[in-house]
Image 1: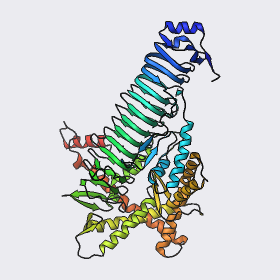
Image 2: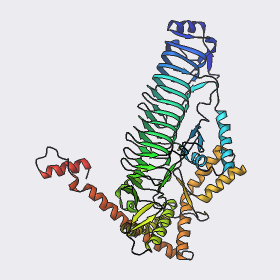
Image 3: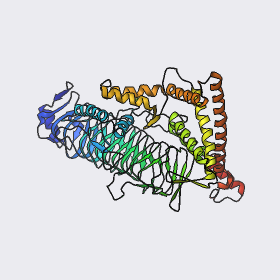
Image 4: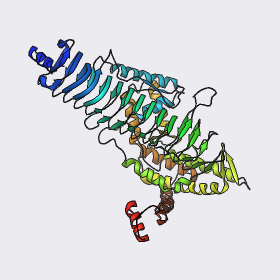
Amino acid sequence: MQKYRKLSAAEIAELESRNCFSDNWEEIQVDKSFLPKQLRNCTLCGKIYIGANVRISNIGSHIANYILEDDVRIENVDRIETIGRSRFGNGTEAAVINEHGGREVPLFDMLTAQTAYVIALYRHRRQTIEKMNALIGTYCLSREAELGRVGTGATITDSGIIRNVNIGSGTSVCGASILSNGTIVATPEQPVFVGAGVKMYDFIVRGKSTIDDDTILKRCFVGQGVTLANFSASDSLFFANAHCENGEACSIFAGPYTVSHHKSSLLIAGMFSFFNAGSGSNQSNHLFKTGAVHQGIHQRGCKFGSDAYMMLPIRNGAFSVVIGRHKNHPDTENFPFSYLMEDSGVSYLVPGINLGSYGTVRDIDKWPRRDKRGEGAKADLINFEEANPFVCERVMRAIGILEDLSHKEGVEVYSYERMKIKASMLRRGLKLYRQAFDKFIGRMLADGGTKGFNGTGHWIDAAGMFLPAREMTRLLDDIDAGTLASLEQIDKRFRTIRTHYTDFAYDWAYKTLSAALGHEATDDEVAQAITRGNEAAAHLKQMTDDDYKKDCDLSMAIGYGIDAQSREEIEEDYRTVRNL
């Protein structure tokens, strides 16, 4: 605090002439360049440190116990105060995934999607969770202070109550109603915007995020690049590039790119990532027996159609589409790229159909381009690779299941895990999955990799990051053993694994090919697998291209060229608007 000095008697007199007051001017310290004209119509209480070029005006009640760094501007605000010693939201627990509890994640300003994944989902490893919570507890204690902080260049205007909140540099708070017990982690390169009518209680917000339009958050974490508008949420985590508007969330783990734009949409008691909720999407986690204890797992790339409904518990496989109302707890993990459709209360599975959909191609292509986190450190680790061991492993399971079912002769509709599969759809799905397997194996082999990495066995998708289960187990064992003894070391291990993703994936693909051949694959056999993969990829691309053409067919020009006098004008309007 060497840059600060006490006010002179002349400065105090001038401040009071400008309708500025303090219960103890001795507790107010200012930058050496301070001029009284920077303040008017405000009351300062407790300890206040005012940096260079800070502007304060029209404070309805007071500012108490805060450090205001250089170039801060505060105008038309009711009050800004720190009461007692505060951890500014660090250590608050959010009951994610299961509303009833048991998967609580402590919020803190270094939280990442991968750390939260472990804490929420590895409850069977009690010692690991205890050690991680102890590390987090120590870190949160280090954030405790009796003075709040408003960072360099932050702006707070036209807002209500800000209590026990640390506000990072470059933050803009404009029209917020109340912010209580939280931290906004921001820099000029990674700013945060908090807008009109926003109410946040017990929260952490990371950079490049926007929270606006009467959003209400309670016990929530908001990660980098997240947008929330006219949205309410409690006990929820929103990680990189999630975008939710107009709906509601309760006890969700919103992994990267979780999207819900529509009114009357409820996301509850579940884990999501790369997810899109149609209008009126809904889930039930309460079966009126033992309480709200059920949960849903929605793997990467799932979509809910309009008015889709699922009675939890359920598990949706990667890149699946849910249409209709499903009450019999389907589990489609082993059928990625599928449609789950309801007819007269029965859940019908259309396996693999999304492999031929242009919508899947568009989704996979758009996610990297829509990364709003900007330059600099990215907290959450994300894999965008379409061909990966996690999905390919499940494609292999689908092939095995469908092959076993197909051996039953004379069956028109198969039953599997509380779902129905029509014989024609089974045959088509089997063909699509075999092509997907060839494509994925070929692409992973073509990407190459450094020898010496063991990618064999089961793979997981840890909230956006693909990694071998054995590497996750090794990481957790090292936490137990004390080898990884800090949050920074745990994060560094995750980043090291992510750096070698291609090496692990190549080894998995090579060993999988070798197992299928019954011997270690030769260079020629690897080359043949790559060729098969290219051929399968070309065939699937032709299907998705054809699907795209259907959506662009001139028969879709209904409603275009509204005042056109000829078919040619209608078609020209259609092509211009659609950029065809």
